[in-house]
Every structure is written in structure tokens, then in C-alpha cells.
Image 1 (cartoon, rainbow, N blue to C red):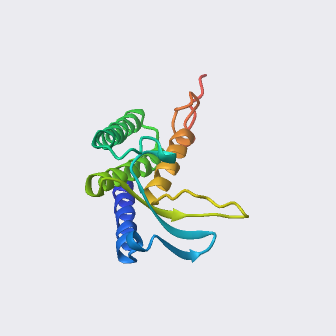
Image 2: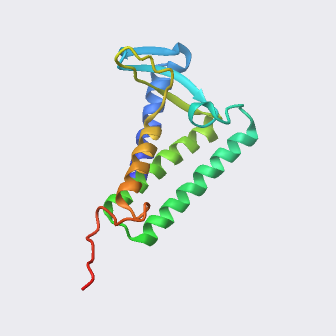
Length: 161
């Protein structure tokens, strides 16, 4: 359910901002500068422009990697029975990844539009709701699973007697 909620929220915000506010043509909208600016960026690659040459092969590769990682995370969390918080984290990551896959399938690139700057530092990068969910999901998986070899944060520790 978390993955579906993230996917829907991500796609609704993209449609509302990119097309509803016509950001695709306007390029930039000051919302609360410099803290929040809608700045249109079509991301053909990964973070920081990696694999951004706008080739069909790169797009297929990125879609495939996102789907394989999403499936692996889902299977891993279900198999580990890590608890509800790990499942929420997995849902965040999977929903975000699938949201960006949908963009690549429909538009050929990921629609990024959120830009935040502060304290004299001008952030040149844009991101979207899916990116935030992926980040939070990855952090949650580290915290709430046995990923690092420790005990899960939301499962009771069984002590040996």
C-alpha cells in the first residue's frame, strides 16, 4: 500500500506541476525562493547526470535496474520478516523507483522539478517526490533490517539463555 501511495502521489505532483502549472514550458516558478523553487529538469540518466546521454539503451538499462532492485527489495524484506517499519521503507523505495520508471516509459526521462537552496548555497539540482521516497526508503532499510549485520530496529532481540 505504501508503494502504491508513493507512486500515485509522485505521478499526481508531476502532472500538476509539470503540466498543470506548465512548468515544462515556463522552466522555473518561484514558490518560496530560495528555499523552494520549481525548476524543470528532464533527467535522462541517474543522479548527477550519470548515464544521461539520452540513448534508448541507457533508458532500457535504467528501467531494468530499477525493476530488478525493486523486486529484490520486496522479496528480501518479505523473506526476512523484518517488521512493519522495514516494509514501509521497502514500500517507499519501490514506489519511488516505479514512479521514475513510469516517467521513463511515458516521457523518455524522469521529470524532476523540486529545487531547494539555502544559506547562500545555490543548489543546481532538481528532484521529485519519487527521489525523496527512494532516499527515505533506503535509509529506512538500513535502519530497520539486518542489512548491516546487526539486529533489526523494529524487532525484539531474542536473548540466549
